[in-house]
Image 1 (spheres, chains in turn blue, yellow):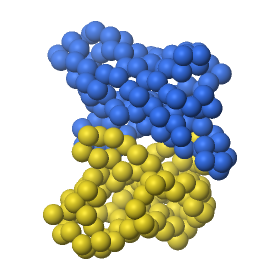
Image 2: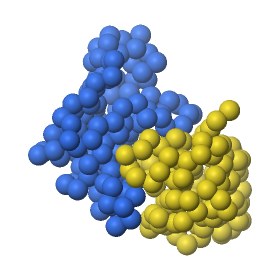
Image 3: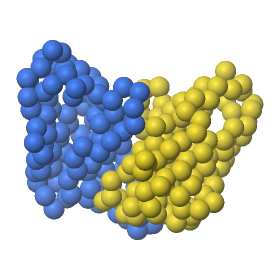
Length: 117
Length: 114
């Protein structure tokens, strides 16, 4: 099955700096890579995603890059703000995982991002 | 409000007891999920149902039994609770079962087994 590794486990930056979180995946069949943000005590929420036919996607201050050959993808947050402080999860998904044709997401271990004012 | 809701929000119980967590979504989604988030924040899928049919059943002790009476509800029953079951359990739903769809999470149920 799929294995998603996420680094670093904790990341501390100053407000205005950039933050980068990296993930690697093991299953070359994975074709969908979402990123979820979980604020303290709250539920995870999707912030951006990328499919395997795209190398980069950007939405305002956040961007995700994908390198299929190396099987890794990254989240980039520019001009960080204190409200960006949260746990960020990457995930890998394969539409045919388990032969269901539905697929499932395998999440990384999470990165605790702290943005200091 | 359109949302994924779970009850109860907190559950504190003794080892050996049986408990249930309920989940409801009014988003009209076909697919629902149960995830377990442990103390290290690791989020792992347990089960998934598509239109009341079980489609994902991960390696989970058979003390955990999901039930979907209709596509808007997915409940989780846990028998003979153990200390290691303490975690936050999240229900989620998505429009269809394909992995490309955003999953909408419920607020979570924090289960503490004493």
